[in-house]
Length: 238
Ligand code: TYD
Image (tube, rainbow, N blue to C red; front, side, top):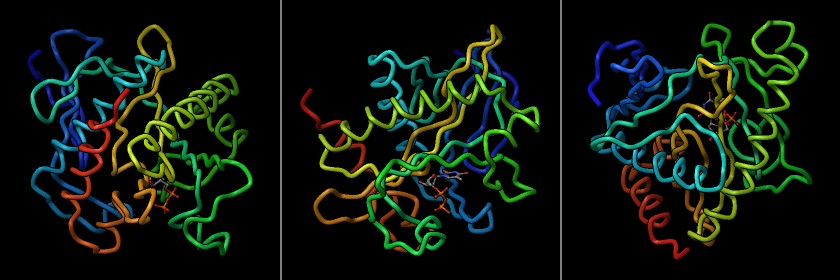
């Protein structure tokens, strides 16, 4: 499928229209950003790895009956996806405490909370993607209570599936960011990517980080550690 018009040019991804109005192409760039795009770099091979990891995970979720925008991988850096109207909400699922949640709750990184924590954020760069609650999301008109219930249900089942998939690969699935959109016929499905840029992934034994925290904290070996995630996921014996 050919790319037609560039319809979104993000820091890390681009979206192109195709000849089918219900299908887009997501192009993964090598650029990496953090802290609301303040810190930026270009890492050769990063786009291809995130594209491959996302494709592998979306394929796995599809086999388990989860509806996502993923149709197929095309070439090295592109995913052919169903076109959605994005819901400007980010749903973050924390299995372990890490990052800003650790400072906010004064808990050590790696602390396992008594229950999985779900954080809802309003995806609005100008406002710094603030934490919001369900009624604020509905009051803003960005989602209905039914949409939110569907998003939490997706998040709960996807998280359960990926915790066990990553465990089989010797990796601890610390947290994940999910985004959603609606297709032209109104179906709410999972969109965006699932990769070491949007999840925290630690080695189950050593605790070594295999995600964007390596970039956030200048730890080096970023592309190599993403490659190890892909390799470990590919090595799982079903
Ligand atoms: P979160 O705890 O919300 O933020 P922080 O990076 O400040 O600790 O992040 C949890 C996970 O979700 C982490 O793996 C990064 C990812 N994430 C994104 O990829 N994009 C986002 O906009 C947000 C809020 C989180």
